Image (cartoon, rainbow, N blue to C red):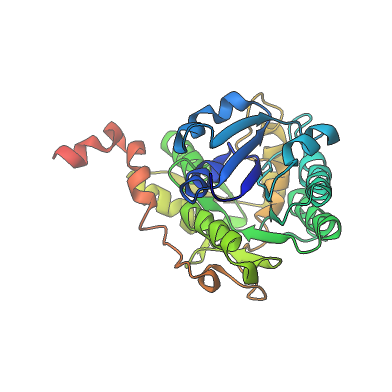
Length: 316
């Protein structure tokens, strides 16, 4: 089979699910380095027999990482968490695992390393998430000189954890508290555009080894994005401004509940700073990708949150 052998850490996650098929269509062999290969089984059918394989990997174990990158031409690290829970914390995944994967990729002789970071990553950021992403970037660059760093904004798509999560909450809650009124600016990027960008980096040597800020075409405040959700779902909910200090206390209490917290104190800190492109680094357009608007994509997949599952408007 033609193409490269590509090891993708975290390949069964949101971004990976949209990337794997593209790479398979290009003729690459894909090794999905994941904790649970069963979680990646649905992706195997996106390629020919044997082209995509799940590979049980523990990113906290050096030998496991070494086995996952052995013989790989390209290594892509998509590992990340939005909140901490038990062993799944920022330090272990965004810092330690990032360093471990970069060092292993270098030792294995990989030609490329593509590392997924985040827009706004900064070592002096108030939020631990953003700090850990910045430290991870620094260690990756040290262990694998010439690595490509991708910094996407909030990523949206049909199975995202942003618009879908808030559509669920706003469909059920009569009131939604907004830290400092939701003034923080965001520049959401479509997951398909992000996947296209990764493929183009892989195929274009001149674009490798750079830091990329990958964002959508439009800037919205957090409040405006929630208003979009209400518009697309036909729901009503009072968006109530709340001081960030009060919101942090509320989020800390939410984090004590089992399962995924709707909001964490660290995320409240993230919401106190704008998350838009600085303009200091190349972007999607520089890769020949025209960024897609929220209005072109999100209304269709949020239709299911309308009363009656959106069927009334289809059959009326």
